[in-house]
Image (cartoon, rainbow, N blue to C red; front, side, top):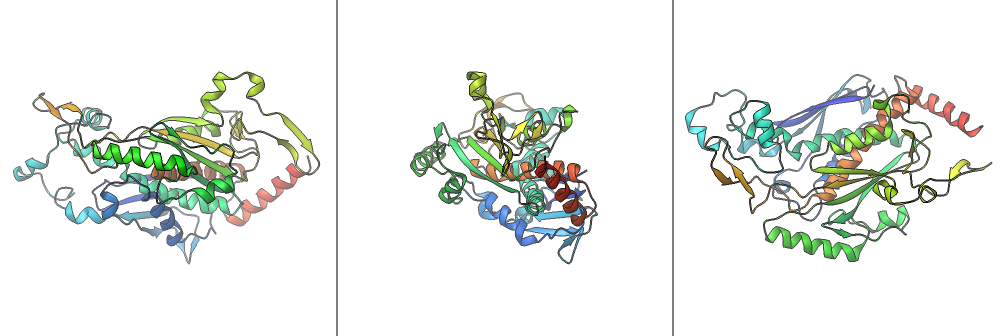
Length: 388
């Protein structure tokens, strides 16, 4: 089974992850991973942290001469800001009185601060916010980049784009995916509707000026997947459930849709379900994809389409009211460096977690210890489907 563990505080020495279960023989290059890490740092509305960090991955274990060995792969991204935090985040120093002024006792609304402080019996909110921070999403993007490389060996393509920011919706429904990809600008808001993008930018600009933040919606698409990834036989192996869980695990994500999503609740059955057709050339196929490529917890051969809603980032430069944990007196919440909007960046993280879940299901379906073995199994299955 493909799995990973990650570690690393936002202002610690580094972010790390161990990816276990990847077959031997996959070419993995640091520069390929770094391309997605750079994409995560783009987008209009990002904060000052992006000016400090230029994320680069280091492959520490599990790859030799550019090829995976089959044993666990260790990835690391160093935090450049560590040099400014080496004493404040030291693992080898004792707490001493002169550090008292850096202790955070005012939790921010909308963050893990207060709940984590209580749950883990802490004395400093920083001990919670450092790992709860979206900074650790960088290492998830690195893991996702490896998974995307694995899936690309089988012709699978994964991409994303922004469909809404601050209630302003992009008009893209009549565009092909090629048109969408040709129209998005990752340095801006990564939306295919240029007219809407101008209005979105102005909304973010105004929110930033007012010390506020803006959320939005992004869509992730996976193309050229085989029929039958996932299963209906156990609840925790349903591909739709696992995709939804992974997307919801991204910081600030509050809702996930697959295909038509919540729109299906407003429609008649005849307007929701995808009719099935057959031809000698295409075999079983559908003319619509309202299900988003997933039926009964399994991929059905159509494009997988998932959508995630991101709330406005809760760290505001015009702070909300909070209560000091020690004194119990009302205060304005403390401010960390933050983005006015990070929806385009979240879409790159969305690609990563989708890639991981699809790679995991792919390896479970076509299992093998090497790329050659998995490719043989996959080709055999393709021939079986082709001859139905």
